[in-house]
Image (cartoon, rainbow, N blue to C red; front, side, top):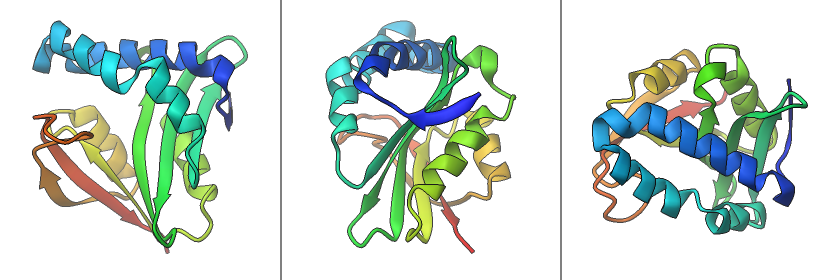
Length: 163
């Protein structure tokens, strides 16, 4: 498994990964129709392509040569001291193999001036919360609208400070 920068040719595989992961994680919480609506908006090819061109951002994939097993996207705000980790997903069948940690490490190493990384995670996503806590994240707040204004999806706001 190696971590590399995502390119335009990866976008269909990344979208497939996101759709698979979201349905596996959230169908029981929000229903398959709502999850499809979210993935068609947040994880459309157009939305993913916009991330490729975003300045002060890093978009990486975990690639084993036969499939994209994970992906992550983060961007730096203002002075570059705070990173926002917008996405970090690993295919359900590949979770627990260290891929998430490799993606997170690559994101953090891509921003040497950063002092912290923040993210939002659904409070019902126990697996993700456990992962982030083992990676040194702590809860610093909550929101009722994860990701987009008025999404109606609650989230914990987690942060990890760098030593």
